[in-house]
Length: 338
Ligand SMILES: C[S@@+](CC[C@H](N)C(=O)[O-])C[C@H]1O[C@@H](n2cnc3c(N)ncnc32)[C@H](O)[C@@H]1O
Image (cartoon, rainbow, N blue to C red; front, side):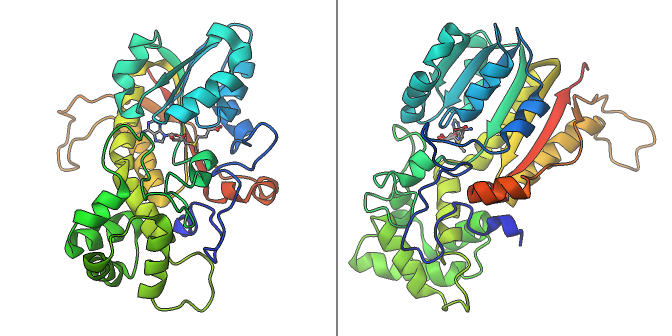
């Protein structure tokens, strides 16, 4: 199992407290310390006059740096599925005037949304996956173990089904498959059976209830490196937001939206995401998809991306200053002319 599955939310291992620092950033006076920001800026290579897309605006920390790097006239389209992130971004980026264009949208719709906003031929596309500290620390959203509000976990609360609905309706086999596939949870079966038994008497409505249930269902670990419910929470969040499906769509959109020479930069926080990004770049770099036994290419598929080298991880100093950054992995690629 990839170690990045451990404590992806940066929640305290005893489950008694939620880390107040954002995923991918520590709290500062402006609210967020973005992850690997120098590496992101270097890899994006945003220049004056360029068009950049930040498809996961969050606290707008990266967006702010991208706008600074592309001064005086570079423009940025910032998207987030969460309306609260857009409102926050509008305040934080107000000083850039019409250089910053913000839209509430899921990046699975990027191929439609970006051209409509005038970003149909972009020089950079940045994705910083997962959730923000603002979401994690909002007890009404149900992302943290201690959250007392309804177990929701949707980035966009106007669409889709909250996590509590999945827990109320999926059968034990479906829950086991979900926790195993999206959480790599070794006790997926035990946890699922406990959920199904418990919910007949008491509906599982809050994150707090679910965290306590998982802790009861699994054998006590020798050491609490992570809260026993970490993988279950991660699996539910990924399922509720169809995060892997959205990632596939967002990556594909990069091929349509980036100009030749334009750059795709992705920060992921667990192995499922990173594997998708890695395979996407490798496949688009290779071009031809003919089976090895075919002597001459018949598919005619051309490379559309060039990898910008090996993945990068945060420095020891950054991890020390911002423990949430520890599972981050950055990959970049450049669009090449077909
Ligand atoms: C890790 S935070 C981004 C932090 C940001 N880079 C910063 O500097 O503050 C991820 C953000 O992406 C948003 N998000 C996740 N999946 C999304 C999707 N498919 N479409 C749009 N926004 C998404 C979340 O709502 C969250 O606000």
